[in-house]
Length: 434
Ligand code: SAJ
Image (tube, rainbow, N blue to C red; front, side, top):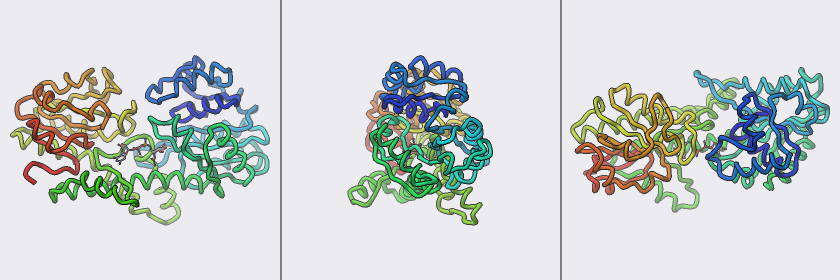
């Protein structure tokens, strides 16, 4: 259920392992694309081959209709999106709808596997009752319910699915064992078997929130060290020489389909249970404030060159939420662009993953050269590989006199930027003279 960035590779890898897989999706174009052995997820290395082979073998087909697939299934894997809404409240409508559909077509003995990221307890308290009332069957006796949350990095999904151990927690030890065996044999990965679905969902959130909180700490160090004239990146890299320091890096902020929303699943369950997770909530606030800090740095870098944001041409390099993915979901760069536009800047965007497309109401230029042409300031929003070795002198030469450079993803150093003649600012970086 759901042939998105997680569902499609999951279906294809099961089919490649010899399972007879039917993929169900509500989007006609995705169903047609899949049945043609293709996918628009072009930035997922190895995925095209897996889909082509899976469809070619006849083991994978896609359909709009769940009626064909579910009654015949031994396992039903739910991979639908679970975003948060404007009020940061988890939106479980897709998983509710999928549970209703599955429940209405459920055959005795089937095991339902939830891969979507959900709050601890949502499987037991939301999905289970829907399945039981729709199927008139009992969970744990007539059908199985297991949480096996996806753990794949967008941009490395196929590789991650074949290497990262899977977390498996079912209502019964038998269903846990069957699903663990399924993923071990189909994906060749290890599994960690847990006592129940809510524990498995807590693991998934804990690892993502651990990351979000540590990124927030890195961002806090960056804000602090900027004021103290210390280079936060130099500090973090040096700390990483100690065995128990896991480096996280400051930057434009935290984007993507996962981290900016996952905290709210736990925050909402915590508040329901009478416990406010202060640190997790504060980490969200710190990370959500980083785009505004980048805008402040743009103002400072332009001021150093005797200019203001209003009337300046500002080129944004990279809008994707992280390097080398064609994905701008909840990207922190959007707020940087919107704020600069509001403040009267002329904004240009260049991103190798979105050349020529329209994003945030702007046409993405097709080359870095045209984006920086006659610009007053360049801002690195995402550290795509193409921006790792920038020809700073060449870029400065194309820009207006007294050019400014703001690095929000530590791709250049103060020394490199000043040598090229830039007024420089960087998240967590020193400034000239400090
Ligand atoms: N980021 C930083 N500093 C860092 C690391 C990341 O600012 O040191 C930013 C990134 O630029 C990006 C955001 O955080 O905007 C999220 O990046 P990410 O590398 O965490 O990637 P995601 O969100 O694509 O994937 C995460 C991964 N979770 C963990 O590594 C714990 C992935 O394994 C999960 O499967 C995925 O969430 C998910 O689907 O939940």
